Length: 167
Image (cartoon, rainbow, N blue to C red; front, side, top):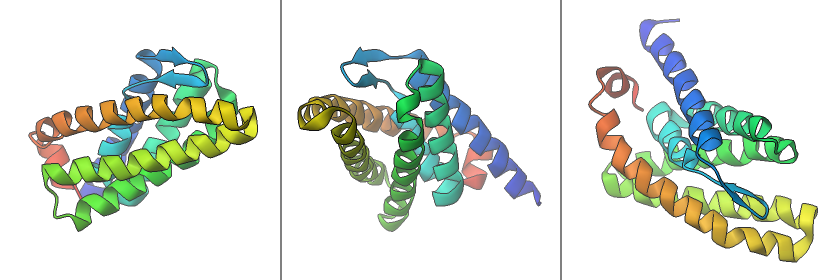
């Protein structure tokens, strides 16, 4: 493993921890789960770490937050939903030439994945009414995640280690 790969692995672990903490510590309960700023770190994980490391970081960090918060019924779904979100954010960001507007577009598409993913899971858990009740709350969480990731990204680019590993 070379130095760049090691830095990327360490950054992935840190981003996973930040995702977990931002999801777990700052929670606003909702009827089907909770609203949190952790999705900003899901978006940033994909953008900074690329599709593979970003997916692992976002998925594992988010899943651990569900387990810690007492929502084990969501843990496996969260792992896959947030990993897919990070992959999409990474690919969209790269395709759109790595601009601030690219983060917004990537976040919107990632938010659609999150909303559809949880709608599908909650449909089987709670029925159509329960699944529909989560859509507006996921929308609020998506907007918050997009805004926060857009604000944090320029700050993270100032960190030499982040700038060095960004894909």
